[in-house]
Length: 142
Image (cartoon, rainbow, N blue to C red):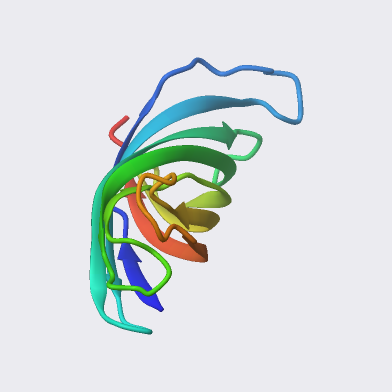
């Protein structure tokens, strides 16, 4: 069991595509910090950063669903029997949505499949896999 905090900063990198389609949207790139505090079976932490690409489905004005995926790198110190501490990679993929409560502020909800592994650079490497349920707030500058 662990608690994760993912502060992020994103920038739109595409114009709107598929303007007349159900998948009308745009692409963002998101730089995200990963700060994880472990509780069970033992305490510990992981810290690093990830780069995600997000596709926003822009059919509605208030509700904007998205898909996202990317990877990151960090350091793990969980003292687990089946996962070595040290260098760690964070591949991940997920779905979520922004709900605009004002023109610039959204409440966000997302679900991600999150993987932590050292890619076989040290044994043991059984990985830590989790379903993450994320909630947060976003501010859009434009």
